[in-house]
Amino acid sequence: MTTIDRKFRILAFNPVNGKVYTEKNAILLCAKDSAVPAALRAYREAASMLGANGAHLNSVDLLIHRVDEYQRTIECRVPDTVGEEIPRCIDGVGVEE
Image (cartoon, rainbow, N blue to C red):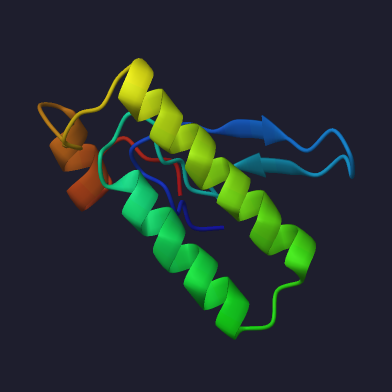
């Protein structure tokens, strides 16, 4: 299985349905990155157009609000890929495929 997110090693667990997500089937966006609210708004619009249910759209709206609040009160910065991240993210150096 191909690694999708080359920047991060991910281990996430959905406590409701028990599904596990890694860099092989998920991506990670950091709440501090100033581009994330716009990405979430675009995701919400696409999900709505695809017919996502109201609960999902409401959940995304609440997530956007939490990220906006985080950026206002804790940390906000321009996203970047630097140093040794560059060959890993661009060329897959050190990534387990």
